[in-house]
Length: 335
Image (tube, rainbow, N blue to C red; front, side, top):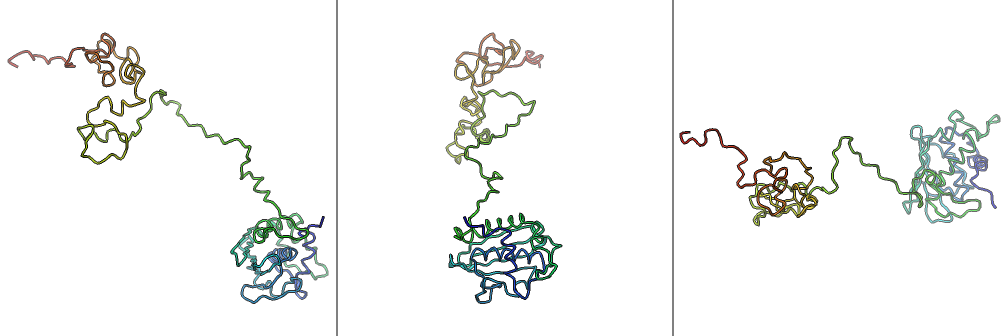
C-alpha cells in the first residue's frame, strides 16, 4: 500500500522545494496557508501555469512558485493550474478577510466552483511569521502551523470541499477520496431505522370546558349568518356563495339550518335528544311548568311546544302561548 501523499509531514517537508530559490521568506500567516495548499495540489499532479488571471500560461519546473507569487499578499493570492486527467483550467484564490481566510476555486470551462472558509488562527500561529526558511536559526516550519493535526484538518477540509468537487474521481497513487464524516456524525441526515418524531402535544388550558365528541362545528363556520339579510333560504337571483354547502341559512331558521346540521344532533328520534336540540340538556334543567321553548325546531310530531307533556320544560301546551300575563286593568273597558 502506497503512503499517503497528503500526509502532513510530507507536505511540510516539500514546502521549501516549492518556494523560489532566491526568496524563501514567508511574510504572513496567509503566505503559509497559500504555499501549503499549493504544495498539496502539486503533490496531486496539478501543474502551475500562472500566478495571476491575465498572463498567458507558461511552464514552471516542478511547479516552483515565481518570485512574484506573494506580491499581493496577504490580501489575495491567485494560482492557475492544469491537470493531465482533465481538459479544464483551474483557478484557486486565497484571500484574507479580517480574521478569516477564504479559499475560492473554480474550473473555468465548467463553472464548477468551491469555497472554503477557515479561521486563520485555528491553523497557523501569527507570532511565527514572518519566517525565513533559509535562516540558520530558523525554527521548524511545523511550528508555524501549530501541529501536524491542524495541518491534517486543513488538508482534509480542502480535499473534501475543493479537490473532490473540481476533479471527482481523481486517480493518483497514494491518494484516496474521503467521506464527509462530519455531516454523518452531526445527524443532519436521519437514519432509516430512526423512529419518526412525535408531534408536540396540543396545549389545553386547565379550565377549558369539556367538549362532547358528538358535537362538531359546521363545515363552513364563516358562512353561518351571511345570508341573514335574505328573507328566503334560497334566492335564485343572488350571486353564488363563496362557501359551498351553505344549506338553508336564510332569515328563516328551519330544521336544515347549519346549526342543526350533522354533528349537532343528539341520539333521540330524528337525531335529537329527549330534551330537544342536541339532547344534552340534563333532567330538571328547567323548573317544572316553566314556559320554556325547546332547544331545536321540534323533536317529535306531538302537539304543543314542549317535547313531552308534564316533563320539565313542557310549559304551556296550548297554542298560541302568550308567555305573559294580561296587564292590570286589561279587562276594563274604560281603560
